[in-house]
Length: 179
Image (cartoon, rainbow, N blue to C red; front, side, top):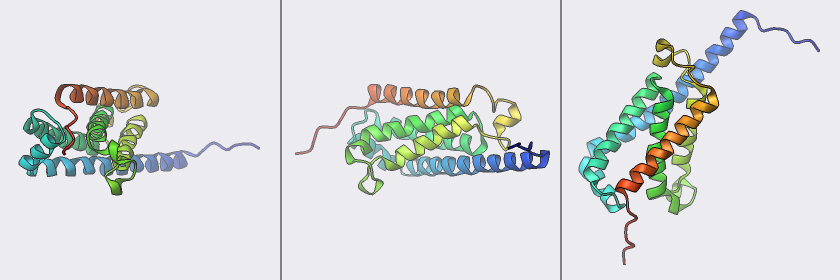
């Protein structure tokens, strides 16, 4: 069977749908990170206390950095700026949350499990692979297609997990079980 080449208008329609999908994914993921970062920033004393209770050294610094990274990465995703790097910040933040809070509780979020942080991390890696699309700062700067999709995904996952490992090694100790 012969395949017909898509017409320019059909190609444009397909590209528009992909770009709108990327924008929706960026807005949902970035908006979620901004909301979490703002919450941490508004309740800085409470966040620092909680960080201390789960084993972080320098909990106030950790709370401040968490807020800044979450808001910054979220804003970068929403605008489509440095998308693979912003995605790596999401992966790193959520990898720390996975290790320090969610892993012992199993999979389901209803039990404080890692379902939510795992899903958001996967979305961040997928977004890095897909690229930020035409409706982005990355496109305006001409950097939206740097690297292949697998390389962008590997950058987001590898840099994020590497950053999480470094943060945990420097600032986290498993708290002693309460008796």
